[in-house]
Length: 452
Ligand code: AMP
Image (cartoon, rainbow, N blue to C red; front, top):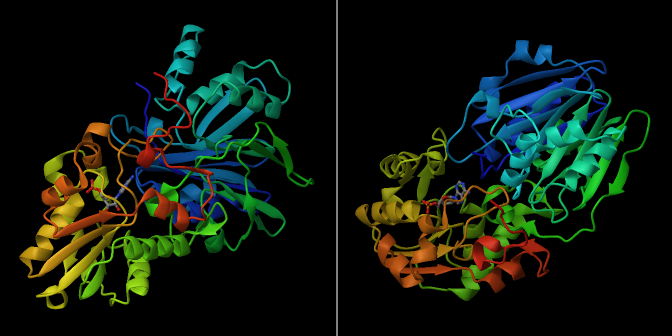
């Protein structure tokens, strides 16, 4: 089985003293992108060192472990996967020794032809150590006959398809790559004499780096000591950048594809207020995912914003749990209304998305139980009708409520007085009205087919 549905974070540092410590802080700020496992590989110029394990960044690393990771370049990863294999073997970075030396790689995204390539490699005699699609790359690089690593990376990229924001670390160089569609984000920052590459710019803020630009879709950037980073445009860019980064996934204090996530989330809320106004006493976000959009909705509608629901931050994301009964309980553990605020009131409740419908149904139920007079659910994204093949963790089509129920049926299921979703046009207006986004989970238009 090849593990699918990984939405993760990557970070890389080059020519930065104590690189692994900066990687640690970078990963700490990217923890929301994956809580299952974390790892860092560093290079001291002669040898690559590796520490990885299951759990949060702060659980995997301590002072002693970071001391082992010597050198002034490093790559790091946090991992989030759906179900199945979650042994430490499936944590990243993936490290290998091969004929050119040593290599470590970190990956955010999902390769759509991973099974096919893996089968071919196994037939040719490759022995796989993990279930990760990323391991294909290591085998392809090791088998290549080219004498330079960057040529081998380019050759391997021509065999893979799908979503990849990758950082490779060799003993003396670092390579950052984004697939031609640019499905997943990847930004470059400057830190004193060195360079930082990360999934989101919030990592730069924490370590004091300055955002320079994004890796262009289809671009390979080579970092080498004593030289300016070298750009190789391996593929013609055909941008299909994941719009869900803006809706839910990224942190609001990040720039994604060069734009403020917070500002765009507010714009989605304003659009939603224009498209689906309703008379009510207050706008209440489902924290944290609905907060920015609720501010936008309140601003555009003139209806006051209230934190009518409080989140317990010590509970992991409800999405992770595999069984329905635990998911139900976890929503209650995580979110609790302030009875005194909501009692007798007409509420507009804002969340960013409905996936299975569990969260909305629970929230509407609790709000009504605690005395809300009316609950008008507003979602700052279109209905999620299809799974993602490019690295966002969504369940199968059958489990997506919007793929089997109409809006009216969903409204009845969640028990709201009214329910409305932002339209696809409204979403496009909010994110700058260009055609460079992937919206496959909303419109079914998949830029790359998934191959079994
Ligand atoms: P559900 O309860 O299955 O309808 O899931 C909806 C909730 O999950 C919303 O509060 C979203 O903010 C959140 N959510 C949406 N997409 C994801 C995702 N890929 N991973 C984790 N949580 C998500």
